[in-house]
Length: 172
Image 1 (cartoon, rainbow, N blue to C red):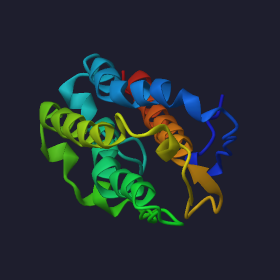
Image 2: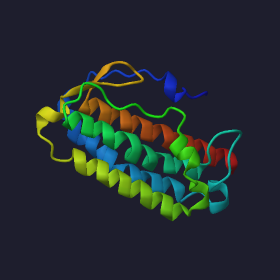
Image 3: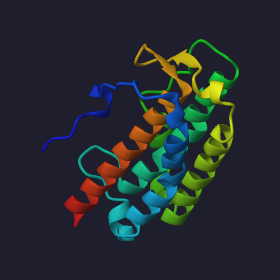
């Protein structure tokens, strides 16, 4: 079955803001789930590209790139009460130029863990009203609560985990 392209995804943010603890746990667990998934892929396959896409290692590093370069700044926009979130570079130049394939998977996973730890630290323990604050998402053009943004990040994480799983299957 063909997968839906990330940029074609539609989101319904109709869940209660009180789900923020569960979504935060999902965010907190991404580095561990990523590490577990990559333990099953040999070093040689981790850097192989399929067609014009990224390698498995580049998909793994992409999470750290976005956490540090986009998602943390969006959380800070909510904390500052800004009306709109900062835009992401939709060309993903940070990931393309990061040289993830030239680093060990341990280094990439360490970067993912450090970047996610910073993001989760910013989110953990906020007053409940902060999770309900809204800002306009630049690409989607819709107002999103901070808790919606957390869900969006989680979905993006899972999109790349599913891609890694498919690539590992195909490369074997």
